[in-house]
Length: 277
Image (cartoon, rainbow, N blue to C red; front, side, top):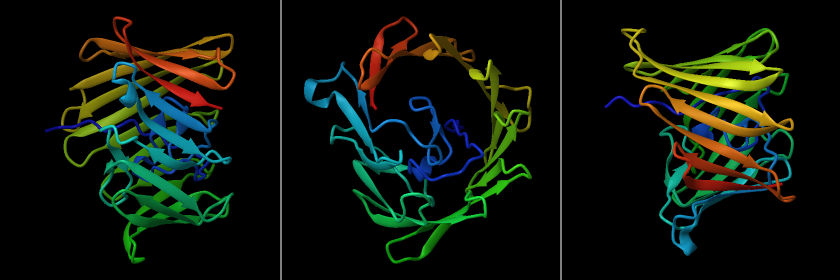
């Protein structure tokens, strides 16, 4: 069965922050950061579904340290198993995962422990403190797999090679991500195209094409951003291939947290995020 890959974006300034390395480079629409790369601005994020029984409404909690790095992901034993990271095999199901960093600024090693195993990541940097290689080592210290990252003359990331997949990146004249191309091993080429207005994200277009027929597009969608009082107000996603939509609405009324609520195409509540500063 042909599957579509998750949204992957990697920016040019590589620093190890949130550490779900099976999702390295994925764009996070909640924090607006690049997983594994950008620094987050929240101390804790709770994903909540008020449609669930009271003791199961908090589906998971992510905790971050003072440097914006993920230190614990707790899925609350509520049946919402989500991935640990494993460079060799990709995400798999765990209930809890913790991270210990060897350094507060530029860590050379990350020790990971989840409900299945313990393992390490060894990080290698160039003279600009950008990561060029990540080695996944098992509990015995044996290297199991490796990621490699490449940059252009302007130190902008151009490729992430995970062995089983490669991701290619293009940048505009203002050093903003312009396009991401992700060919899979078999059938599909996934593209993300970015537009900006007044130096703010305006749209992200998501297109999936078949390799043997680029005009044959099985999946097409667009994220549209709107702002209010200079803050992000709403993200609307329209799936033009299948004719449905959803949206996330941003509420800044609380001093200690940002609330992001998800609604379906009919405006019915689905879930929300409580993002604590």
